Amino acid sequence: MQWPGRYFRRLSHLLRWRLRRFLFVAFGIWGVTEPALGGRPALGPFEDPRPGELHTPVGSEPFDVIQALNGSFSSPEHCARVPDSLWVEVNGKGDCIRYYTHGLSGGENSTVLVYFSGDVMLRTAKGVRYIAQSYRSASPMEIGKEMADWSADAGLPAVYLARPGIYGSSGDHNLRRTHREIELMERALTMLKERYNIRSFILTGHSAGGQIVAALLNRRQDIAASVVSSGLVSVKQVTAYWESRREIPGRLLYDAQNYYDPVDEIGRVRRDPIPEIYLISDPEDRIVPFYSQLHYVRRLRGAGLRPHHIYAYAPGPQRHLLARHAKRAAALLAQRKSAEEIRMALAKLDLQQVR
Image (cartoon, rainbow, N blue to C red; front, top):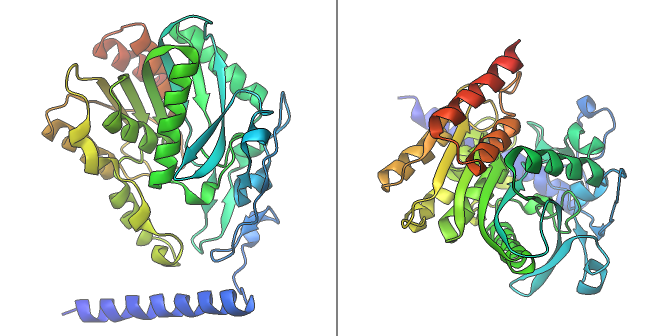
């Protein structure tokens, strides 16, 4: 029998890393370096973030990489000076949630597109945290242009709702996936609905933004349609997947018990009428394993819902980036195109990427 040996190897590995964590916390002895990061800002696996007051870039000013890594704080008075922002409180603690819009009218807005991005904080196999290179070139002007293009494609207003701690919102991106992040986004969506007299939403999310879309689909009655690409929609499965692949045990890095898993509340999705639900996946996804996305689709179908699951091609090497597909599908839903027309349009995007 091999399982006792495997068990003791895992236990020994866990105890070694517990000792390393103790040494760092107690004495500041780190001992793990990441030369591949080339001196880029990073946080060790047991290093506490050092948040500062929220910076507010405008125009072409880039977002602050250090704040994305360490987190930021705000106040109702400070948030009132942030362009297009909402002061949102959950359990007595508030955050300034920033958003970017195009096409909203001063009267009623019948249906609005809303986009949630994926993570910008990544971890090495040793648990060291750093910010994705793409975030270093992002700016409010770039997001505004992105929403203008999406709105023009769909013929509807478009909103980019920034998750806590990134893209201009205060908060701590280290604490993503939690119930609090979901509740902040849900309350922010309600405040947008009231501020702009919105009747319904077409929600779109990529990767971890898909977790938020799936959560809101579970909890709200005003979602006309949802589109998720490469979605983190079965959180427990994905957490277990990465636990087995990192050098450092995941349980020492985060409290997965506090994560929100959309699968757990699928029974709450609206039934009358049933919203349009689209999942877009690359079966070769190296970040969010395909089987976890397929599990979510099967659970939806088991609950009597009718999701459309479209297989697509994401560029290598990670085969994960399908946000462009998700926005295109949402725009076509806004135009009331059929499922077959949406599939054909996404197949054309695939062909453009493989040429």
